[in-house]
Amino acid sequence: MINGETTYIYLLSDPMSQFTMLDLQMLNNVKLVNKHKLFKNKVLNILSKGHLSLKANKFISLPLKNIWYKKLLRYKSDKKVVVIMSPPWSDRQLIKFLRKNYFNCKLILHFHDIVAKDLKYNKQLKIERIKKDFDQIIVYNQADAETYGFVYHPVGYAPPSKEELKKYPYSDLVFIGAAKDRLDDIRNIYKRMTAAGLICDFYVTEVPNDQRRADGIIYGDKFLPYSECLAREAASNCLLEILQGGSKGRTYRMMDAIIYNKKLITNCEEIVRLPYYNENRIHFFNNINQISIDFVRNHKEIDYGYKNDFSNITFLNFIDSL
Image (cartoon, rainbow, N blue to C red; front, side, top):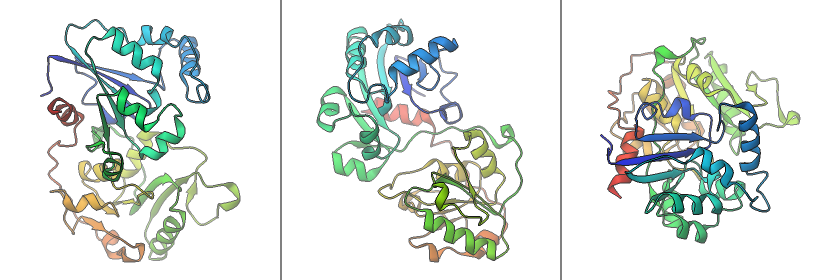
């Protein structure tokens, strides 16, 4: 159980949190504030999102943001306060506001993506500056922990049960993700699997129109709603994961496979160190030519015996231990 003597304030910046943090939503001492929906009032929501957006603050930090911080983050608490902030929230005005209003609070910057990517999108993120501003910096990617001297810990995760998801057509193999630096690999795997008569459900974004092909892959203009991603995975026999360059940390796809009892094909090195690893249900590869068609084709009951150890509560307990 998490420390009942502490109030945890999560400053989130992704719409997925309503599906990935279900274990925290009912806890009285955990407050979730998501940048994608700050207020129920539509007008306030539009105004606040615009004022606090990274795009609006790209070149200079806009003044008067405390107007929104006072409305969003004035919690009455006689407990110790720990603020866990995602990188898009990082802002000098916000840090000063939190230090002033929560005496001796602990500020933690939590990277859910590769550090270099977040540094690119939020210009206020400077390595030497954040080392001074935050009490602790936690990254999900082991390579970033080694490069920058930050603390490593996998992301917490608590998705809906399969029974809560919308029913989706069956597939032998599913891949959902942005093309990034892996489009050729995605296409080669899709071609091999479909040529073998397997049903493949591949949805790929961030592919320019002039590079799209009529090859059976769905090239999306936008990311799928996360609930649909989960529904497609739950309907498939096997999940495919291909890490983007520079990434080595545990991913949602890996955890989805284990939680939903699905076979997994992945090049994430961390998987072989987990107690859930077994060659009969997880196919690790270094080269896409190593991927076995028979592994995907074979149908058998999978049970990882998941013990809830990916939970966000485990992550909060880790923070307390620091």
